[in-house]
Length: 234
Ligand code: URA
Image (cartoon, rainbow, N blue to C red; front, top):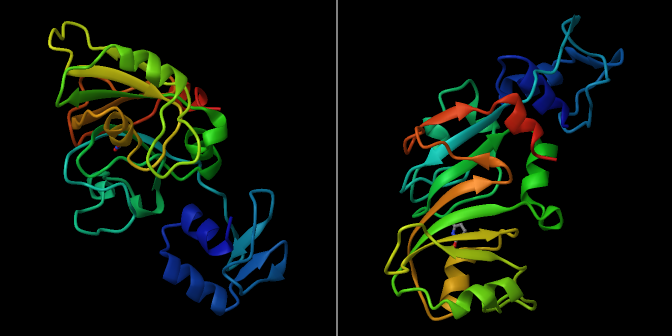
């Protein structure tokens, strides 16, 4: 981790305040004054500010039920970042593991542990994500087999990974389905249904790996993950 980031993570200081301490020569790494904020450090290094030893804070792991019209970004664009809703210290030091579109709701995982989020995002890890999807047209059940085999998305060179598709319980018109995929290509779910001449009219993520969005977490609400939930990601 960068030295300025380490200082922020283990103190109340902002990134600019950390940089200014570094400039003043107040920071030592293993006894040596270091001024370059980009210097890479890890938790085994002895890092002192003004003679005081810093301890890295433990990482934070949060789930949120993302509301409509918020974005999964650390900067506001046409819509506000959902990080505004997370009332923790230095919320904008966190990042979102696996983005949802502005018009998608549901489960997002938020952390400052890059290694942990890599296990969710990396296509190699095949981490399952389950979406409840509302379709414009009733599902043609032949599509279930097609999604199992993989579909060709526009602009992609290979088929999608096998995906599991089922009609939602009690849905007679077959316009509400549950789709489980292991990838996270740009607009993947919408593009998968577009590839079979249907259209997504509503999208809500319910599960990532073994972590399930609880029914009692309303849109816009968040909570810390339990230890078991954190450890389920590997
Ligand atoms: N697939 C989409 O098309 N949109 C999302 O927000 C997530 C997956």
